[in-house]
Amino acid sequence: MAIKSLRILCDVVLPEETIRVWDGSGGTFVDGDGNFYRPAQFTEDALQSIEAAINGEAFTLSLSLISVSQSAADDIWDYDETASVQGSPFVVKLQILDEYEQPDGEPIVVFTGEIDNLDVVDASELGLPCSIHPRPMTSSASVCR
Image 1 (tube, rainbow, N blue to C red):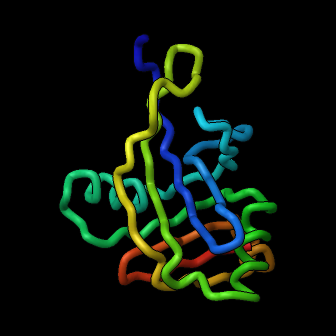
Image 2: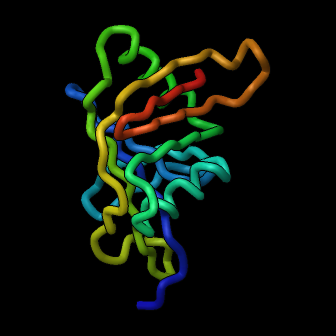
């Protein structure tokens, strides 16, 4: 099958649940294993960080997501209020899609790390879009709700 596009998938593996987001807008993306990924958008800096990690130029990864769904932001906010996310696995994968925008094969893991910190900020009062700033492997993260 011809490769038509890629999806960048992120898994935040918390002790009680896994929060999954994909880089893009629109609806929920379902991977080949039936996992549901909520849409969000990476900032330009985040895409550059992912590229550096893929090229072996970075041992830490700092990501910022904007336009995170309210439900994903709420899940992260609620979890952060009751438990520590420090040490939770964070995985970034590339999923090749076929001409029908369906997963073609297994996703390629391009970064695996542990979240060092997660800051949660309610940006709605400031009129800003929600964002997630996971910075795995000796870094920190922020979530705007």
